[in-house]
Length: 200
View 1 (tube, rainbow, N blue to C red):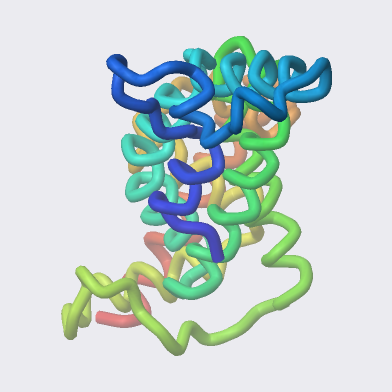
View 2: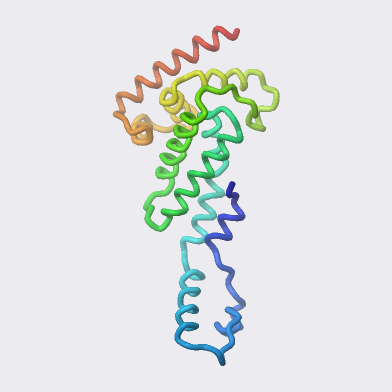
């Protein structure tokens, strides 16, 4: 599993003190310098000056917690949620330089990762609740009810009422028509009401 510190290490190269020469900063013996060393220095300078290095670390720290919570509502367990989000961030990291708007792209990748995880796992009873739920029976009941929905209904309800996404955005994330989203939400809420009523 990949965490914030590892992402930062992967995308950043420490800057050397400004009063040192480039050779001192890079630990290179000037006497042994040649064409190959010059090329190495140029490559390192590109990494040091890469503006996206800090951007990705910031993006990760801002998005990670919320994406894990969303994934938990889609998968029902904390461990599965962390795994799905880690896979999604790995995908975003590989394509970071090609992504114009990483937020929506990450949303799609997390949802796809959760869908794949749900297919692999099938219908399972959650065994490791999200830490913040503690012993809240009501939260546990809601998690169980959400897990009882087909994945697309579950995703539509979670994205609309937990994520605050518009039906148009949800349609893009789920690769369907906006009208289909409304139907998914309607059927999902109806099923949730029935399940919650049975638990009373």
